[in-house]
Image 1: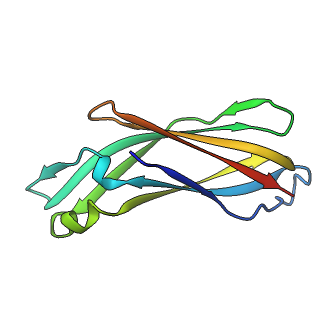
Image 2 (image 1 turned 45 degrees about the vertical axis):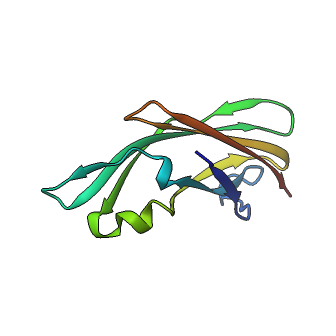
Image 3 (image 1 turned 60 degrees about the vertical axis):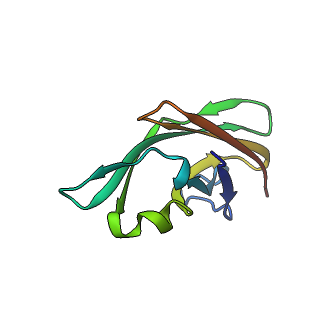
Length: 123
């Protein structure tokens, strides 16, 4: 499973000036996810769990809560979808500096897992 993490521009919430919100985009290749056919619904479905970890500029490690992601693909789109990515969006709150972000994705049907990591400079 070849995951990728991309970050967006940091913004400061109104009530917390020293904390910055950074949007994250996690791209999960659908071809690596176990999808079960549901003939009654005309879909293929699967379930993954994603979890982010952040190492901040002073070295503290912060683990996010696991997030369950339900994936449903119309049967008519399954061949094209197997070559595409499922996009999961999340937001982390950090202080300015150089941070590392890691992601873990687990396929709930098979137990297969993959990780990705990236460095982000938050101004």
